[in-house]
Length: 363
Ligand code: SF4
Image (cartoon, rainbow, N blue to C red; front, top):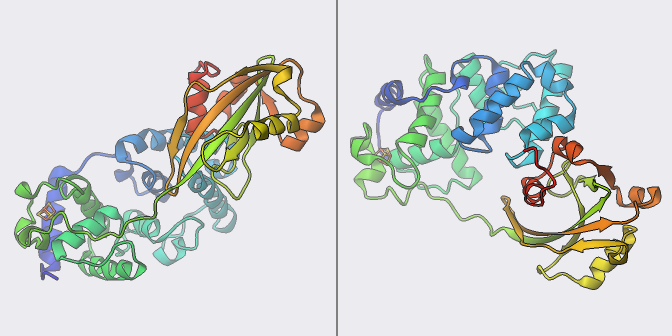
């Protein structure tokens, strides 16, 4: 490991930050609620894509009390497009926890922040340092990369043991008087200067003391073991329509997209549609090819999640008769007009189909 002094490292970093930092709304506040919102959103996406979501959420819910009392469907709808919907549900739950257990006031210590649901060490460190100036270092992908390269740390950043090594190193570097700016600076440095693929080493103020640069290891550091390949899944959606209303259902716990709305689903193992099974499923849903017009899929839709790769096809069946109450209850289906569907929280893949099929024209 190189021996760049903490004072030199933090001094250089802070002066670089003063010259290069982007102006972002969550950097101009010490409101822990806004900081928390921004961190939850930015875990999902890059700054440019996350910014409109931050603005939407702070406008719709200016206080943690507003978020806590909002209906979950509304929160999921605002979150739509960011993915990882469990984060949105956790965020909503955490807002309620803050209101019910902490009197609506964010805890002001790192250790207490960790007690909040969905708040891990990164988010707790970010809130504790940005809002309350606690001297605790944040660790995210940017920080891992910067530290691994400058200090020549070759531990696998995907391992829990490495987290301890990096945390110890980062905590030894963070200055007591400006922990907030230091944390912002090191993340910004990783995002702008010491980027994953083409870091700007030529004009880097830390170049001389950078282990990776001096040892020709910029592309080798940080070390990260490969994640497991995503599991392929094949969805055949049956879009049941009767007189302009579409039957949808809310997804349950125990699978992806919990709480979001999609259609009657037949899942196959290999992407092949078992027609017999489909007919059986349609029959079970109280519908059949004989009772309506079937529009076969024009194309497949793909959606990649962290551990799953989804391919979906949509079979649009226009029914002559409406489904009976019994069938609707059994299949947990509810009929919605396109205007109502627009307001429902939906996976992006479903939204894309609805737009392509001309069902949603107001988006
Ligand atoms: S010299 Fe290159 S690898 Fe080293 S810190 Fe600077 S940008 Fe990153």
